Length: 169
Ligand SMILES: *[C@@H]1O[C@H](CO)[C@@H](O)[C@H](O)[C@H]1NC(C)=O
Ligand SMILES: *[C@@H]1O[C@H](CO)[C@@H](O)[C@H](O)[C@H]1NC(C)=O
Ligand SMILES: *[C@@H]1O[C@H](CO)[C@@H](O)[C@H](O)[C@H]1NC(C)=O
Ligand SMILES: *[C@@H]1O[C@H](CO)[C@@H](O)[C@H](O)[C@H]1NC(C)=O
Ligand SMILES: *[C@@H]1O[C@H](CO)[C@@H](O)[C@H](O)[C@H]1NC(C)=O
Image (tube, rainbow, N blue to C red; front, side):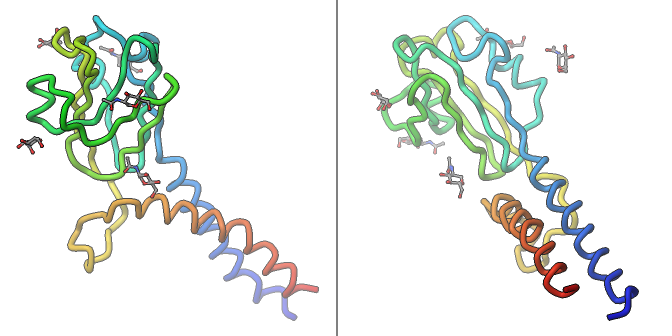
């Protein structure tokens, strides 16, 4: 086999590794409230103003699970501090994560009364400044596509070297 024939495949592999790591690295963790975590008396509007949220990012809530909880609600419930018809109950052990899968506004409240005191969070999740979404999706990045892309890239990164070795020996 000529040595030259490996070059295109090597380039493809490097491109995949580069693109894959770019895609995977672009998921960020946001520790809600910074070192304050999720508790009463923190202005989360101020905290959120200094962050940018993108599809695929994670929110990490750290809180006292005996005192507080964390619910995803819609805007009406956010404004009224109403935890009755919540969308998702994120409360688990007090170090709970929530993935922002879609590009839309998200609203979170503590339903234990502290919401009226400002223990509520509204954020807007934006699409990643992505390289040319395919026309069939109408310019909208389908939810979860980043995750799938990330996993697929990782699989390729893992399997491609084997493909190389098999061809060479
Ligand atoms: C915003 O975040 C940057 C970088 O983490 C930090 O240096 C800055 O102090 C923050 N500003 C506010 C108002 O929290
Ligand atoms: C939020 O949910 C409540 C209860 O299900 C509903 O009455 C209200 O119209 C919803 N608000 C929005 C903005 O979707
Ligand atoms: C949310 O989930 C936690 C833990 O499973 C539970 O203790 C709590 O009662 C739930 N809250 C609501 C409003 O359903
Ligand atoms: C986000 O997508 C992941 C992967 O498909 C899924 O497991 C998870 O439940 C989703 N999270 C939310 C909050 O919808
Ligand atoms: C949080 O800070 C913003 C900007 O300073 C202010 O408009 C808002 O009223 C504050 N919220 C609470 C609950 O104090």
